[in-house]
Length: 361
Image (cartoon, rainbow, N blue to C red; front, side, top):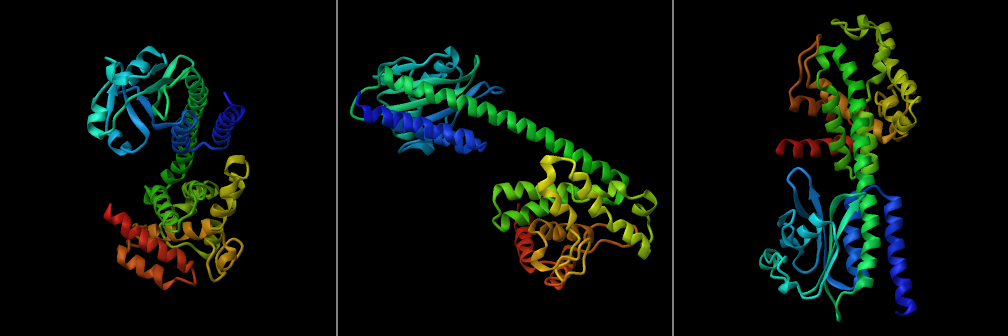
């Protein structure tokens, strides 16, 4: 085999390895895996099927090729079709006349109108556990061979590690968010009037972030900051926090400290330091008359400007001991009236658009 081809294959595998090591975006990794398979063995189509343990069936997670979208609707039981056989027996196969193979499931070709002629199919495994199957279909200008299989084995081993790492990351993330929500819930349970406040502020904040086209990373920061925006209230005495009458000036100053307390608490957790600006500054005002640092306009971090709108809207539309809730329309008008003074006008605009979309869901 020509040296240039070997180098090209090695380069492709290394490029895929780089993607795995630099990203936990599992959807991107799986799509790149199927693309790499097609490119490595120079074939017409390729797919990555994943195994659903609960349903005990394979489904097309990624399908590439002329009729790929139609194929994605198909599900295979373990043992059904060539892919099902590979998943069941944990063995790779090279088949250079698929139509004559008794294991071949013709339903995929019938639904898609695609003609499968040749195929390599191999399991994606971690230890002895089957995570899925990679298929490469219809090699161009020749038949599949052992070298093609070895290339795809190298790819499959990397895919397996990537899928497992992403699964473990998601588990850790879920655990982390459970702990974060538990902390926020501890605060809410002290005040019966704020039940559900944290989740609503989170939902509104994330909706604004999406409307403003923030990156996934920024939206995750926003989500966390919104969940923990009032964590500092853990340092406020019940007789002030739960007071049913309006607060005195002195009591209001004590309440204001919750933003500073929140920042101090989060400073102890390395993974949460990025969200401190959102927690500390969500009571700053666009005019510069907010607290704790009297930041003005775009000096206020965007994450805090967003939470400020979400937090205030929810407060206005929720009954409190000293006042009844405003209607949604009244609260929206109030926000609009304070655009440019208390709130960032761009955030208000994004919230109104996002809220309209949320109501349609």
